[in-house]
Image 1: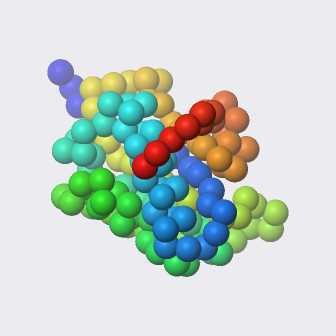
Image 2: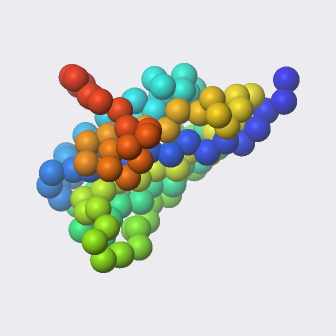
Image 3: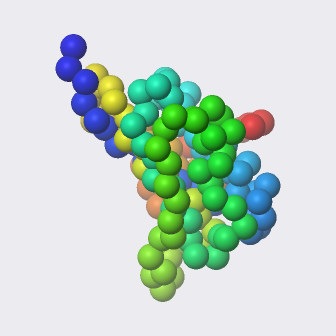
Length: 129
C-alpha cells in the first residue's frame, strides 16, 4: 500500500475575539474533520492554522493540543489582509499521510466560512465540543 501526503482544508468563523470562542470553534472544526476523514493523529504530519488579523486572543493550535495532537507539528499565522475578505475566520491546512486519493479527502467549511467554499460546506444541526 502506497502512502501519500494529502492536504485537508477547513475553515470556520467566530463571533468574538476571545480565547474560548477561538478554541471552541477550532475544536468543532477539527472534530468534524476527524469524523469526516477518519483521521488518526498519528498519521498527521503537521497542521498550519491561520486567522484573520482581527483574531488575536489565542492560538488556534492550542485546540489541537487539547484534542491530543501532542506530537503533531503545529504552526499559526495570520491571513493576508485583503479588502472585503471574510473576517473573524480561522483556517487550517492539515498534512495527512494516507493511502486515500485526493478525491476521497473531505474538506470542511462551517459557520460563516461556508461562503468560502459552498461546495464543501457542512450544515450543523447540533454540535458539542
